[in-house]
Structure formats: C-alpha cells, structure tokens
Amino acid sequence: MKLLVFSDSHGKTRAMLSAAEREAPDMIVHLGDHACDAQEISARFPAIPLLCVRGNCDFTPEHAVLETPELCGRKLFIAHGHYYGVKSGTAGIVRAATDAGANIVLFGHTHKAIIDQSGRTRLFNPGSISNHMWNRERTYGIIHLGKDAIQCEIKKAPA
Image 1 (tube, one colour):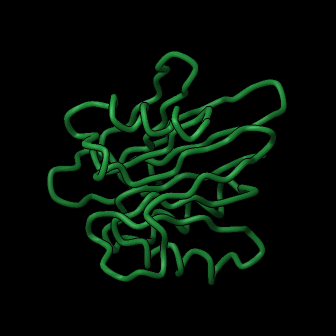
Image 2 (cartoon, rainbow, N blue to C red; image 1 turned 90 degrees about the horizontal axis):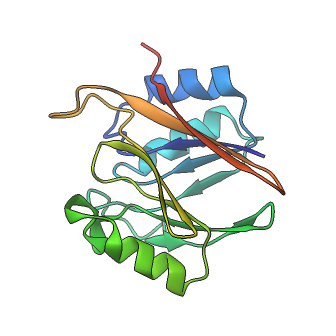
C-alpha cells in the first residue's frame, strides 16, 4: 500500500495536487495545519481514501486530533504533533504511540522532514508541503506499507 503524506500545507494546495497526480497513491494522509486543504485534494481525487488530522492552526472539529488506523497489519499513530511537544523532541509522541500499540508514528508541526527509529517504533515526518514562513524546502512523504516491510521516503515538492 502506498501512502502519500502531507503536513503543514497552510493553504497551499497546488504542490499537493501535483504530487497526488504524480504519485498515484492508494491513500492520502494529511497531518494538519490547514486540514481543510485536504478536502480540496479529496474532491479532486475522490477515489483515493483520505485520512486527515487537525493541527494547531485548525479550529474546526471536523477532523480528529489523533487517528490510529491499522493498515497492512501495522498500527499507525497519526497526529499533528503539537500536543506531544515534538518541537522539543519526540519522546512524548513515541511514548503515546507505544502506549497505543502503534508501530509507526506520522507527525508534522516542525516543518522538518524526519525518518527515524526509536526502539521498535518508526518515526516519520514529511516536513512541510508549503513555503509558509521560515520553511525553505517544501517536502512530502511516501510510505510503502507491506506485510513484511516498511519503506519511507521524503521527496521535494513539485514546483
């Protein structure tokens, strides 16, 4: 299963639309901060399932703060990250994910792309797809989930 992962779009959807066209994912995940941008992507690609969480710049209750789906036999912990203090480190979100029995943590908020491992927990932050504020490099993520393997990659956003 191929997941296309965005975070911190801040109203900039053109690069997300281009990435969705180019990547042809099985599912799109938006990790918050302008979660409403994900609705535009979903309207353009209605056949692709969308999973979206709320970030610290999202003020409507239509999206949850946390999702913990199971995909391809893996439990994911999906959150924006601001409630777990990810700008100061990942210990809080790793602890919460471990308590939830998750294998993979997807988070945003920092605008910095990360692929890391903490014990048995894979950490993945796709960075920011927008050129909002201090963000110098616009990125998104791809996760290939298989029964026996997980492959994560960070890609530069299309111009």
